[in-house]
Length: 199
Image: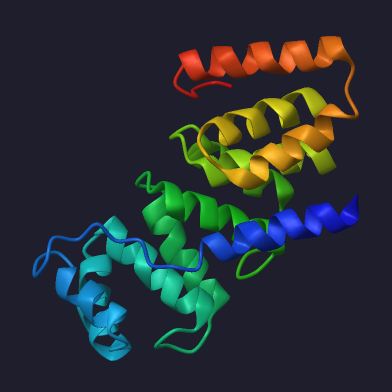
């Protein structure tokens, strides 16, 4: 049981290592993005920092990534969390999801499962399948433990193509009664109809 939880989290953590930036080439961070892809981290940092300070949520997220993983800058979880929060508060679902991880791991911020779930829920409500999977895991291992909601979030994430969610859903289903599974499936359908809001 614990092996799967570690495997799920290990695989899911690896998903969020990359820079995600929908920049148009040459404007609003596009040059920084190209520089980053080419390994020119000093140029990426020089270009992204002023954009991030002006409130560009994509540059804020990308700076968070650089600080979290120590790419082009010394690794600094507190600084990563600061940049993630700025982007997350503007609705950037990758930043919300990664800030959730920071709280879950207690890196750069105090460890806080409720705060992690809050940020993951915000990303999940935007259809972000990894965050939906993280919520499935949180309900599975207790935040609070609720197999019905765990199954619901895993089911939604699986429907959105997240492979790990399928595995989680199937394992949780083994702990549930048929009526609980039916309720979880109904909740997933309702959540989908509501476009993930208020689930």
